[in-house]
Structure formats: C-alpha cells, structure tokens
Amino acid sequence: MTQQSDPRQDSTTSTQRSSAAAQQKVTPELRRWIIEQTQAGCTQASLLQSMRSSGWNEQVAAEALESTLHQLLVEPAAPQSPPASMPGPRLDESPTRVDCGDRTADVLLSMEQPRIVVFGNLLAPEECEALIAAAASRMARSLTVAPETGGEEFNDARTSDGMFFHRGESPLLQRIEARIARLLNWPVENGEGLQVLHYRPGAEYKPHYDYFNPEDPGTPKILQRGGQRVGTLVLYLATTEKGGGTVFPDVHVAVAPQRGNAVFFSYDRPHPDTRTLHGGAPVIAGDKWIATKWLREREFR
Ligand SMILES: O=C(O)CCC(=O)C(=O)O
Ligand SMILES: [Fe+2]
Image 1 (cartoon, rainbow, N blue to C red):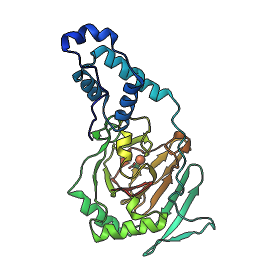
Image 2: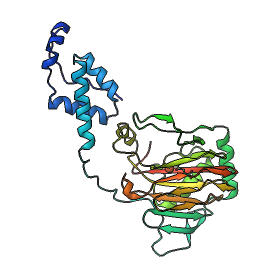
Image 3: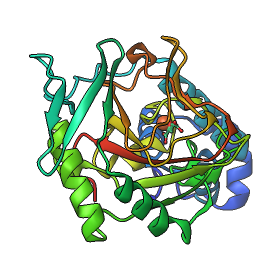
Image 4: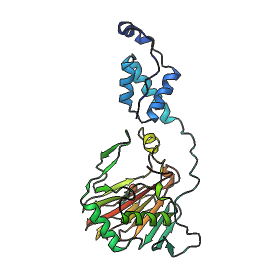
C-alpha cells in the first residue's frame, strides 16, 4: 500500500510552526485525505506520524483524526446494493440429490433464513483422507484476519491448527474445486484457496461472521482482492466422536461433523441481519478436521 503525502501544510519553519500550532485549521481537504487513506488501509498511527512529519501539531492532528474517523463510523454507510447473483445449489424443485459433475451429493437440510444447506456424501472417504494427509505437514496454529490492518493475527477465539492450500495446487484440489463450483453455481476463480483446520479436544472457533466488517479499517484493503465474501462451505473430513458441531446461535442450529458431509451458508450483505453468526463448538472427544471454502463476489487473486 502506498500512502500519499498529506494535504500541504504552509511552508513555515519549525519555530514558526510551534507558535502557529494554535492556528492550524482542519480543512475539508484534510478530512477527505484522512478518509481516503483510512479506506486504503492506513492505520491511525501511521497517519498521525505522516501528519506530524509534514508539520502538523500533534494535538491538532490527533483531534482531526479522531473527529474525522468518528464521523466516518457514525454516518450511515452508503447503501450497498446486494450482489446481482449469489452462490448456492439449485433446489427450487426440492431434489434429494444434486449433480456436481463427477459426483452426486445428497441434500440433507435446506433452510431459507439464514440460507443454510447441509449436503451428504459430497466427498469420498478417500478424498477426505487425502486432504488430511496433504495438509498435515503444513499445519500451524490458526490465524484470523486482523480487523485493524487487514493482515493476520493469532486469536484466542480460534484454537484450531490450520493451513491454506493454493487454489488448483494439485489434481485432487482441482477436482474438488470444480465439484464445489458446480454444486454452488459459482466460478472456481471466485473461491479462496481451501483452508484445512484441525481441532483437538477442547479446541473451538467462537461464533463470528465470515464476511469482512465494513467498519474495520483493514477491510477496504482486503476487499481489493475479489470483493466481499458471500458464502462459506465447510466440508467435514472426519467424523468427530463428540462435540465440534458447526453452530448457528441465532437460529439454534448445530450441524454434526460427519465425514464427507458439508454445510453451506450464504450472506448477501455484510450484516448480522443475515443471521449467519456461526462457530465451531468445542470438541469433546475425538478429532475434528474440516476444509473451508470461502466464496468471494468476484475473481479472487
Ligand atoms: O469449525 C467450524 O465448524 C466452523 C469453521 C468456520 O467457521 C470457519 O472456518 O470460518
Ligand atoms: Fe466461519
């Protein structure tokens, strides 16, 4: 990310500056610059430093940042139009099975609000084993997206181990990605690389939303790569003995982790109204292995 220099300060010397500090005016131009830089992913601290080095008095700069960013948060966001189309299986005739090209998946549950569909038999047992084997040597403690910066960070709410495959990195992944694209009528290119998570007893993923919160300063940067997330498919690679269900607390639904099955849910706007709050309940006995496919609005590079 390149940070543009802030709106010009007059060309006073530093001695003139300290006496002139009281007269520094926060102009609409400066506010616009603060908003643009924030939307481009700059942190408040880096903006403060940049303003100070171009002659702004620290207190004036800090107040300008605070009041401008506060205004940004309390002003209603421009209404976002929902995407023209959404990922999801075609279930208008209530089929019990869905063709996904090289395999047929069972439809086990379909819920409208929130949009949740549970599939059976989407992956063969050998495919589950192969994904676990390919992921196992690449596992590390899971990171989540850092809302402040758009980078990644450790998070106590997520105590699983995980890794990301690159999209299309092996014939197995290409096959599974093509199957998911056909099942959910969404281009392979709009999907993030499959993420594998391993939860041991006691591990969990506390309830959260998968979309990026539009109010987080790091979100504009994340959205540059393919726009918002609009859907999630969680594939179960192992059957967990006890616990570890995918839970939707708003609607009191829990999906049991059964090898080869999957739960899909979608959200047409980044808002709690979608009722897609969800989490991974603590594992009580056994292991939980999942692969998550997140779907973006546009091509994800
Ligand atoms: O562990 C689960 O069942 C849910 C995982 C999840 O929410 C995610 O990967 O975003
Ligand atoms: Fe999630």
